[in-house]
Length: 208
Image: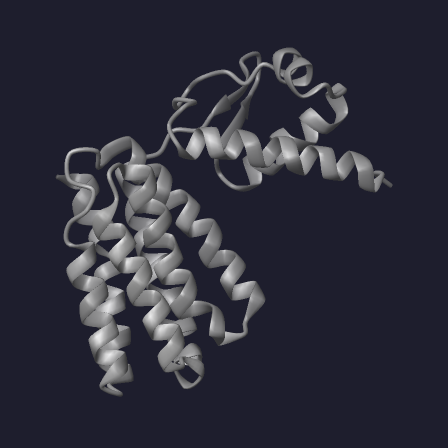
């Protein structure tokens, strides 16, 4: 059995590498060199290999014979798949969250949307965008579902950073305001439909 310490170090390394991959600092096809990463984090090869497995499980890295571990690429089909999965799962989460969305939570969501409007770069905008979705969906009280959605958001962020740099802020702000307006009006089903359409726009963005 692996020690808790080894697992913790592996998780820390995996999280750091995932952030670099998602943020575009590590490009698709780039090799993840075990020796260099072990030296950087002051760790043995054991947690680094475990971190690589975590990245593979997230779809962020691939292990290839004689080529080692590399940053995974992605295709338009994968972008569409993530969009469809997010749309389906976020609709389920929002339906269960609606009875628990208080006026204060909706106000908090609106503030994050305004923060996105004020964002000066894609990284700040993406953080506000994810926060908006997190606030609305967390009250569903379904941790396994939320974990799946969070992983899909990470994939969406990676697509965003790699391909949306020219038009990263539209039409999200308008979509978010529409969703909030419908929730405040008690139109839950219309709000979930608006959320579904909103999430699926990543397919269109990536193909532009």
